[in-house]
Amino acid sequence: MSTRVSSTNLEEAVKKLSAEWQETRGYWMDAKSREFEHDYLAELPNLVSQARTAVEELDAFLRKVRSACE
Image (cartoon, rainbow, N blue to C red; front, side, top):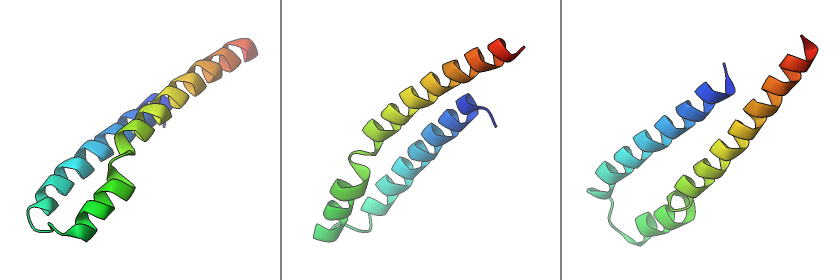
């Protein structure tokens, strides 16, 4: 699996998680749900963005390595 595919899969998984969470919030609306959202979900988009940047840098590095080995 390429690094770009992995990055895209991660973004799609976060989108799906976000949609599922919005549905769950319709049923789970207490202090623990707010705590869960704060502790685990609020920072997720930022972390995925950072991961995407790292994956793009890794992809560029791997392309250079492959090119140098040819």
